Image 1 (cartoon, rainbow, N blue to C red):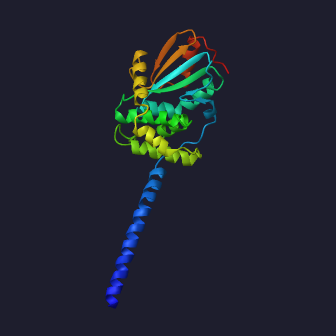
Image 2: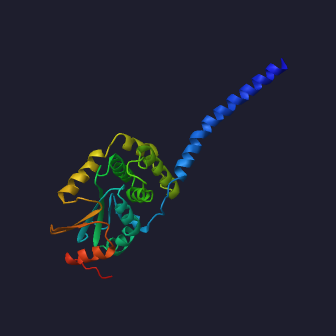
Image 3: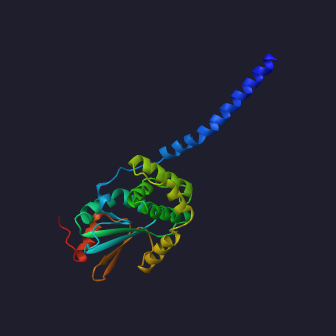
Length: 236
């Protein structure tokens, strides 16, 4: 009798431990998922954000980047040039900077990532999420780095790291239902119409309707020269 009672106790204890493990495991997985992402610090120029644009709507020039988050050259430009570009041209009011995707240019995960940025835009977090995507580049395109599950996990990690209080379930629903799929695909259509054939590419548009295409992950000096050619003062 005693041995049976001990067996039942051990069995019950084992079941309890299994149930406890089932409850804890999702939390551990969630923590592991969140800790694997690099979350960049907030940037002062986020205050200039207007959806997927930065800067004054009445700036003399609009520069639209057509980009793909899976493109290594886009990744390099975003991490090494973009902040300087914003500092030199956007903050002083010389340029309004707009980010647009190229849809599924490099595959389905490019499209999902573009949609995810627009889902973040709904909650006023386009640029923090944009920076988070570019801070976590894939080793290989369409290898799962920008799966929908990871895109949601990235939003959650960003929200916690920067205290953004994002509604993650609303973000997830937005992404799962493909709310911005057509918008991201239209990005590609418009990019091709401007002559974009590779990423990143930058379309300069003046208020009088002129436009100029600059291709590649160019340094700030190339943008400075292009602005000068279009009659925009670039001196401090």
